[in-house]
Amino acid sequence: MSQTLLAPRVAVIGAGLMGREVASAFGRWFSLLDCPVRPELVAVCDVNAAALDWFRQVPTVRHFDQDHKTMLARSDLDVVYVAVPHHLHEAIYLDVLRAGKDLLAEKPFGIDLAAARRIRDEGAKLGRFGRVSSEFPFLPGVQRAIAAAQSGRLGRVLSLRNSFLHSSDLDPTKPINWKRQNRFCGEAGVMNDLGLHVAHVPLRLGWKPVRLYAQLQKIYTARPDGKGGTAPCDTWDNATLHCTVDLPGQPGVPLRLETKRMSPTDTNSWEIEILGTEGGVRYSTKRPKTLETYTRGSEQAWSATDLGFGMPFKSITGGIFEPGFPDLLQQMWAAFLAERAGKLEKRFGCATPDEAVTHHELWAAALKSHATQTVVTL
Ligand SMILES: NC(=O)c1ccc[n+]([C@@H]2O[C@H](COP(=O)([O-])OP(=O)(O)OC[C@H]3O[C@@H](n4cnc5c(N)ncnc54)[C@H](O)[C@@H]3O)[C@@H](O)[C@H]2O)c1
Image (tube, rainbow, N blue to C red; front, side):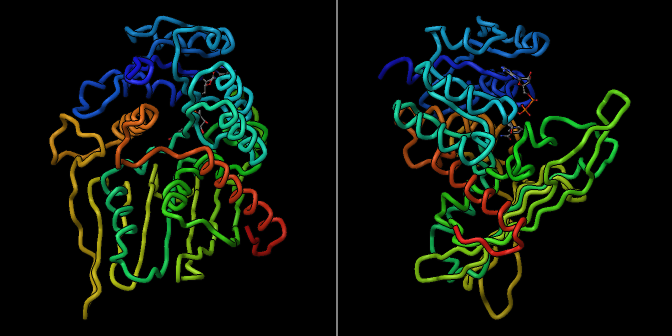
């Protein structure tokens, strides 16, 4: 098998919060025991020279560019990860695909539904391998919840919920940034920002809503601009989508999708709950190694099982230890690169461009539902 599949040369466009995490994940790749691919981070691009400087301590990086087109003209790159503000996704993702590189895109995969469709269609036309970043499904607790949902042992499904909750925006003195302005983040606001995290697992399990009613909230409409003044904060802060899913033989199952920037006490809480007539599972990153389950009986009670470090790709880390955010990103990268090499086997795969397009369909329907105060059919 070719070196471009087994030892891909990876580039990053956007050396901010998420761009740096790639260097961290690759820098300890030797901790993985059964990953069939070994990537090398060779190039980084950012319009901000200071952001590039952080990468000078990464020994494998040999190209430092401030223009992504200069970077994409290089022949010694196989895969490009792009982590830039949402209004730049479409132009840069299309440039990556047209330059002949494979793409790990950041969510939401374009600023809106129309952009997502154009990116997906161009990638399919050109035959590129493309996936979208969503790391929480790689947690052992989430893998177990997915397996329980697929097993059928939970019985008839009573209700489904997937939430992703933050709280730092409760602080009115937090300065504005691009994620809180529609022209950079997109009209869908918090759904663009956090939404793929709550759509990936439901869509992969086949829980595609057929109808939804959305409750959207804007709490603070202005924030400090960081220069002594204020700036408009026009994105949706909190979104609760009450969806209906038709499962085989079970029409009308309720699914609640929640993305919130103002959820008191939640720093980065990703939660899933599946309730059935025979049993249930729930998991929250508030207790990262613990899966809660119940089984129907004369009395029902939740029980808690500590899962430890049972990751999809085995690692040197002891089985009793807790997984964290950097571990998830490394596992997600391993899944992306293994799938690209045709070696994912039965493991869980990254979000697909089709799933990203579908998640934008949900947010477009949510905007319409809120504007018309009606239930929208998808
Ligand atoms: N998967 C996750 O958990 C997760 C978490 C946070 C953000 N994200 C996503 O990652 C992406 C980036 O978010 P972030 O938090 O890293 O943002 P950030 O603001 O920290 O970093 C963005 C970087 O892009 C650079 N940039 C802007 N224009 C550029 C251009 N034309 N060419 C090259 N670089 C350019 C900026 O200078 C900045 O360094 C977004 O799509 C966001 O939704 C994903």
